[in-house]
Image 1 (cartoon, rainbow, N blue to C red):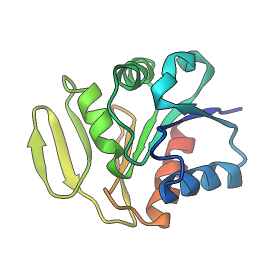
Image 2 (tube, one colour; image 1 turned 45 degrees about the vertical axis):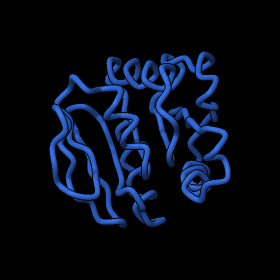
Image 3 (cartoon, rainbow, N blue to C red; image 1 turned 60 degrees about the horizontal axis):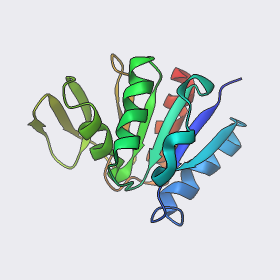
Length: 150
């Protein structure tokens, strides 16, 4: 059975995106465990099939370490809303495509414009991302893609 790790920060626990992401996982009957970004030392990549960062979680060394571990293990990572910057910061040496407000390139990261009710998948790197301000549909579609890839 698939297990998904959901990373939150103290500032995102009440975020609507967090509640939407958790509702999608519950509806799909996917087991998940919530980790607080400020204490990611408990997150063990081998125990999970995918990783979700909903909302604006602060960039921290532990978050970057977790992202690199899941990426190296070729496990899917979903960044919902403003969390795209966390993946971009953690994987700066990779050539990735992720959602952004407008099309541009920063280093090796390509940001593609993404509609609020949609998502973008970089299949080669197993990165799923939504628009900075996604709708509930955008969150649902992105997490359905994560579950399928896990």
